[in-house]
Image 1: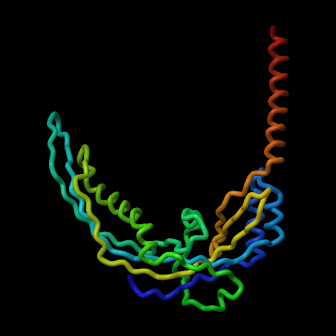
Image 2: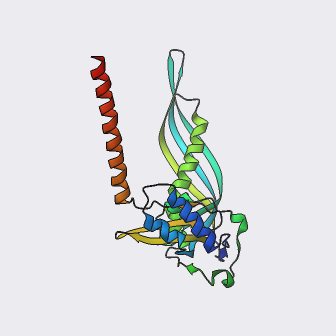
Image 3: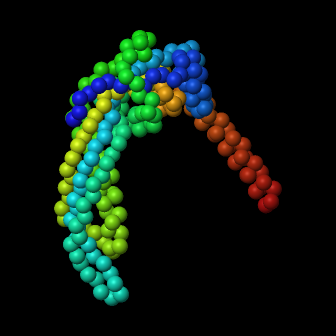
Length: 245
Protein backbone atom coordinates (compact mmCIF):
# COMPACT_ATOMS: atom_id res chain seq x y z
CA UNK A 1 0.00 0.00 0.00
CA UNK A 2 1.13 3.55 -0.66
CA UNK A 3 1.62 6.28 1.92
CA UNK A 4 -1.69 7.78 2.89
CA UNK A 5 -2.22 11.52 2.58
CA UNK A 6 -5.71 12.63 3.49
CA UNK A 7 -7.78 14.26 0.77
CA UNK A 8 -11.19 15.86 1.17
CA UNK A 9 -14.26 16.68 -0.91
CA UNK A 10 -15.88 19.97 0.20
CA UNK A 11 -19.62 20.29 0.82
CA UNK A 12 -21.53 21.78 -2.10
CA UNK A 13 -24.85 22.21 -0.23
CA UNK A 14 -25.72 24.44 2.70
CA UNK A 15 -27.73 23.31 5.73
CA UNK A 16 -30.80 25.12 4.39
CA UNK A 17 -30.53 23.42 1.01
CA UNK A 18 -30.07 20.04 2.68
CA UNK A 19 -33.15 20.60 4.88
CA UNK A 20 -35.30 21.47 1.88
CA UNK A 21 -34.02 18.44 -0.02
CA UNK A 22 -34.78 16.07 2.88
CA UNK A 23 -38.26 17.60 3.31
CA UNK A 24 -39.06 17.05 -0.39
CA UNK A 25 -37.71 13.49 -0.19
CA UNK A 26 -39.88 12.60 2.83
CA UNK A 27 -43.02 14.28 1.46
CA UNK A 28 -43.00 12.14 -1.69
CA UNK A 29 -44.49 9.20 0.22
CA UNK A 30 -47.75 9.97 2.01
CA UNK A 31 -47.09 7.13 4.50
CA UNK A 32 -43.98 8.82 5.89
CA UNK A 33 -44.53 10.31 9.37
CA UNK A 34 -45.15 14.01 9.75
CA UNK A 35 -42.54 14.02 12.53
CA UNK A 36 -39.76 13.13 10.08
CA UNK A 37 -40.92 15.80 7.64
CA UNK A 38 -40.97 18.39 10.44
CA UNK A 39 -37.46 17.37 11.54
CA UNK A 40 -36.24 18.05 8.03
CA UNK A 41 -38.21 21.27 7.65
CA UNK A 42 -36.87 22.58 10.96
CA UNK A 43 -33.31 22.06 9.80
CA UNK A 44 -32.35 19.26 12.19
CA UNK A 45 -29.54 18.17 9.91
CA UNK A 46 -25.80 18.01 10.45
CA UNK A 47 -22.77 17.89 8.15
CA UNK A 48 -20.60 14.81 8.64
CA UNK A 49 -17.37 13.74 6.97
CA UNK A 50 -17.11 9.96 6.63
CA UNK A 51 -13.66 8.35 6.23
CA UNK A 52 -13.02 6.22 3.16
CA UNK A 53 -10.29 4.88 0.92
CA UNK A 54 -9.87 5.19 -2.83
CA UNK A 55 -7.97 2.32 -4.42
CA UNK A 56 -6.15 1.91 -7.73
CA UNK A 57 -4.88 -1.58 -8.46
CA UNK A 58 -3.49 -3.87 -11.12
CA UNK A 59 -4.09 -7.60 -11.06
CA UNK A 60 -3.57 -10.74 -13.13
CA UNK A 61 -6.19 -13.46 -13.32
CA UNK A 62 -5.45 -16.96 -14.64
CA UNK A 63 -8.31 -19.29 -15.48
CA UNK A 64 -8.16 -22.93 -16.52
CA UNK A 65 -11.46 -24.42 -17.64
CA UNK A 66 -12.78 -27.64 -19.11
CA UNK A 67 -14.82 -26.49 -22.09
CA UNK A 68 -17.11 -28.39 -24.42
CA UNK A 69 -18.11 -27.45 -27.93
CA UNK A 70 -20.81 -28.97 -30.11
CA UNK A 71 -20.22 -29.06 -33.86
CA UNK A 72 -22.87 -30.82 -35.88
CA UNK A 73 -23.28 -34.20 -34.14
CA UNK A 74 -19.90 -34.16 -32.41
CA UNK A 75 -19.03 -32.84 -28.96
CA UNK A 76 -15.40 -32.04 -28.24
CA UNK A 77 -13.80 -31.26 -24.89
CA UNK A 78 -10.72 -29.10 -24.45
CA UNK A 79 -8.79 -27.61 -21.53
CA UNK A 80 -8.72 -23.86 -22.13
CA UNK A 81 -6.41 -21.48 -20.30
CA UNK A 82 -6.86 -17.72 -20.20
CA UNK A 83 -4.83 -14.94 -18.61
CA UNK A 84 -6.14 -11.43 -18.09
CA UNK A 85 -4.38 -8.35 -16.78
CA UNK A 86 -6.80 -5.81 -15.35
CA UNK A 87 -6.53 -2.28 -14.03
CA UNK A 88 -9.04 -0.78 -11.60
CA UNK A 89 -9.19 2.89 -10.69
CA UNK A 90 -11.08 4.94 -8.12
CA UNK A 91 -12.53 2.02 -6.13
CA UNK A 92 -14.28 3.69 -3.21
CA UNK A 93 -14.99 2.08 0.17
CA UNK A 94 -15.84 3.43 3.64
CA UNK A 95 -13.38 2.82 6.47
CA UNK A 96 -15.62 3.74 9.42
CA UNK A 97 -18.22 1.74 11.36
CA UNK A 98 -21.05 4.26 11.75
CA UNK A 99 -23.06 3.37 8.63
CA UNK A 100 -24.21 0.31 6.74
CA UNK A 101 -21.79 -0.89 4.06
CA UNK A 102 -24.46 -0.58 1.37
CA UNK A 103 -24.95 3.13 2.03
CA UNK A 104 -22.09 4.27 -0.15
CA UNK A 105 -23.42 2.41 -3.19
CA UNK A 106 -26.75 4.21 -2.74
CA UNK A 107 -25.12 7.64 -2.55
CA UNK A 108 -22.57 7.25 -5.33
CA UNK A 109 -21.14 8.57 -7.46
CA UNK A 110 -18.80 11.07 -5.87
CA UNK A 111 -16.71 13.11 -8.29
CA UNK A 112 -13.20 12.24 -7.15
CA UNK A 113 -11.77 14.86 -9.50
CA UNK A 114 -12.88 17.37 -6.87
CA UNK A 115 -10.59 15.95 -4.17
CA UNK A 116 -8.53 18.59 -2.42
CA UNK A 117 -5.69 18.56 0.08
CA UNK A 118 -7.00 18.37 3.63
CA UNK A 119 -7.80 21.76 5.10
CA UNK A 120 -9.04 22.02 8.69
CA UNK A 121 -11.05 25.09 7.70
CA UNK A 122 -13.36 22.79 5.69
CA UNK A 123 -14.22 20.69 8.76
CA UNK A 124 -14.71 23.44 11.37
CA UNK A 125 -18.52 23.11 11.40
CA UNK A 126 -18.70 19.43 10.48
CA UNK A 127 -18.44 16.25 12.49
CA UNK A 128 -15.53 14.10 11.32
CA UNK A 129 -15.94 10.37 11.85
CA UNK A 130 -12.84 8.38 12.65
CA UNK A 131 -11.58 5.51 10.52
CA UNK A 132 -11.58 2.15 12.33
CA UNK A 133 -10.24 0.01 9.50
CA UNK A 134 -6.85 0.12 7.83
CA UNK A 135 -6.39 0.32 4.07
CA UNK A 136 -5.49 -3.38 4.02
CA UNK A 137 -8.65 -4.33 5.94
CA UNK A 138 -10.89 -2.23 3.71
CA UNK A 139 -9.35 -3.62 0.55
CA UNK A 140 -9.97 -7.18 1.75
CA UNK A 141 -13.66 -6.29 2.03
CA UNK A 142 -13.91 -5.15 -1.59
CA UNK A 143 -11.44 -7.68 -2.97
CA UNK A 144 -14.11 -10.35 -3.79
CA UNK A 145 -16.00 -7.83 -5.93
CA UNK A 146 -12.81 -6.85 -7.79
CA UNK A 147 -11.90 -10.48 -8.41
CA UNK A 148 -15.40 -11.37 -9.59
CA UNK A 149 -15.32 -8.48 -12.05
CA UNK A 150 -12.11 -9.88 -13.52
CA UNK A 151 -13.60 -13.39 -13.70
CA UNK A 152 -16.63 -12.06 -15.57
CA UNK A 153 -14.38 -10.41 -18.12
CA UNK A 154 -12.13 -13.39 -18.65
CA UNK A 155 -15.05 -15.77 -19.10
CA UNK A 156 -16.33 -13.63 -21.96
CA UNK A 157 -13.44 -15.05 -23.99
CA UNK A 158 -15.00 -18.54 -23.65
CA UNK A 159 -18.35 -17.64 -25.17
CA UNK A 160 -17.69 -19.73 -28.27
CA UNK A 161 -17.86 -22.88 -26.17
CA UNK A 162 -21.14 -24.62 -25.35
CA UNK A 163 -20.24 -25.03 -21.68
CA UNK A 164 -17.43 -24.19 -19.28
CA UNK A 165 -16.36 -25.79 -16.00
CA UNK A 166 -13.70 -23.99 -13.99
CA UNK A 167 -10.77 -26.21 -12.98
CA UNK A 168 -8.31 -23.65 -11.61
CA UNK A 169 -8.61 -19.95 -10.84
CA UNK A 170 -6.00 -17.62 -9.38
CA UNK A 171 -5.62 -13.89 -8.80
CA UNK A 172 -2.43 -11.97 -8.13
CA UNK A 173 -2.31 -8.25 -7.39
CA UNK A 174 0.67 -6.56 -8.99
CA UNK A 175 0.07 -3.25 -7.22
CA UNK A 176 -2.46 -1.67 -4.87
CA UNK A 177 -2.38 2.06 -4.11
CA UNK A 178 -4.66 3.76 -1.61
CA UNK A 179 -5.69 7.31 -0.79
CA UNK A 180 -7.26 8.25 2.51
CA UNK A 181 -10.21 10.61 1.93
CA UNK A 182 -13.15 12.25 3.67
CA UNK A 183 -16.60 12.15 2.04
CA UNK A 184 -19.20 14.86 2.80
CA UNK A 185 -22.69 13.75 3.85
CA UNK A 186 -25.61 15.62 5.35
CA UNK A 187 -27.39 13.51 7.99
CA UNK A 188 -30.99 13.84 9.19
CA UNK A 189 -31.21 11.98 12.50
CA UNK A 190 -34.54 11.77 14.34
CA UNK A 191 -37.00 9.34 15.93
CA UNK A 192 -40.59 8.25 15.31
CA UNK A 193 -42.32 6.39 18.17
CA UNK A 194 -38.99 5.22 19.47
CA UNK A 195 -37.79 4.07 16.06
CA UNK A 196 -34.58 5.72 14.87
CA UNK A 197 -34.66 7.36 11.47
CA UNK A 198 -31.47 8.34 9.67
CA UNK A 199 -31.40 9.77 6.18
CA UNK A 200 -28.21 10.60 4.32
CA UNK A 201 -27.47 13.02 1.53
CA UNK A 202 -24.40 13.10 -0.69
CA UNK A 203 -22.92 16.46 0.27
CA UNK A 204 -21.48 16.90 -3.20
CA UNK A 205 -24.36 15.84 -5.49
CA UNK A 206 -27.48 16.02 -3.31
CA UNK A 207 -28.45 12.37 -3.80
CA UNK A 208 -30.41 11.02 -0.80
CA UNK A 209 -30.61 7.52 0.67
CA UNK A 210 -32.57 6.04 3.56
CA UNK A 211 -36.11 4.81 4.27
CA UNK A 212 -38.20 6.55 6.96
CA UNK A 213 -40.48 4.43 9.18
CA UNK A 214 -44.09 4.28 8.04
CA UNK A 215 -46.71 6.31 9.89
CA UNK A 216 -49.09 3.96 11.71
CA UNK A 217 -52.02 6.39 11.58
CA UNK A 218 -51.54 7.17 7.89
CA UNK A 219 -51.22 3.49 7.01
CA UNK A 220 -54.43 2.61 8.89
CA UNK A 221 -56.22 5.54 7.30
CA UNK A 222 -55.15 4.41 3.85
CA UNK A 223 -56.25 0.83 4.54
CA UNK A 224 -59.56 2.11 5.85
CA UNK A 225 -60.10 4.26 2.78
CA UNK A 226 -59.24 1.32 0.56
CA UNK A 227 -61.69 -0.94 2.38
CA UNK A 228 -64.45 1.69 2.12
CA UNK A 229 -63.88 2.12 -1.61
CA UNK A 230 -63.85 -1.66 -2.02
CA UNK A 231 -67.16 -1.93 -0.18
CA UNK A 232 -68.77 0.74 -2.39
CA UNK A 233 -67.53 -0.93 -5.56
CA UNK A 234 -68.76 -4.29 -4.32
CA UNK A 235 -72.21 -2.85 -3.57
CA UNK A 236 -72.43 -1.26 -7.02
CA UNK A 237 -71.50 -4.55 -8.67
CA UNK A 238 -74.09 -6.41 -6.60
CA UNK A 239 -76.80 -3.91 -7.55
CA UNK A 240 -75.87 -4.18 -11.23
CA UNK A 241 -76.01 -7.98 -11.14
CA UNK A 242 -79.30 -7.92 -9.24
CA UNK A 243 -80.79 -5.54 -11.82
CA UNK A 244 -79.74 -7.81 -14.70
CA UNK A 245 -81.34 -10.86 -13.15
